[in-house]
Length: 247
Image (cartoon, one colour):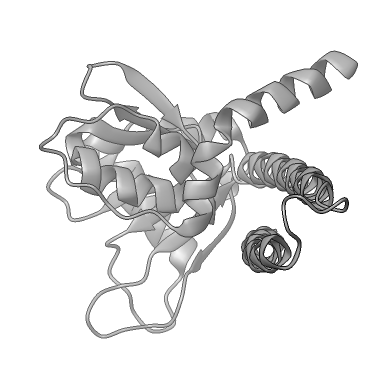
């Protein structure tokens, strides 16, 4: 989906550049008093039509991208990431994890039977242990573990939600811009406290760019696609509303 969005952005940029070059040649080659001078007006109408079509296509792709992101996040609702658990060769990840978390979180109901799967992520490194992806059989058990995470304070072990790439990028940027204490996640949604004190639900960089920030906040450069998304938020919202009405 990201590659499609980038292709559309590149296509729009290329079209604008070529049309601007053609318009300059057109104006210089056809005098304003010429009977065919109305071709300039026809060209502008054609250009506006194509740009509107490209923008509408970009909105459709963005809407599909958000829907795909929502579906992917829902598929991760039973998953948590555990960081800081010591790593060893031939380890039994599930048993070690259950023992550690059940004791630290004081959750005797957390047993190996309640975990569907657990595995390390990425390549091993001597510098620090890899994170563990844990998928629980029931959402209720996952939530008990998640909401007991304060008991891990000082242990070196932390928990985080398994966010999609889109939301993870927005979360990291939010922490840089607003500070760690003003950003957190809940049920796969990034929550940010803006400079006005209000809480904002964030799903992408475009949503984050709309959150009011003080002059002292460090601005983090957004990607080109994020800038495009931000400029289209209002139209995207209207498009989503119309689709819901049709349903």
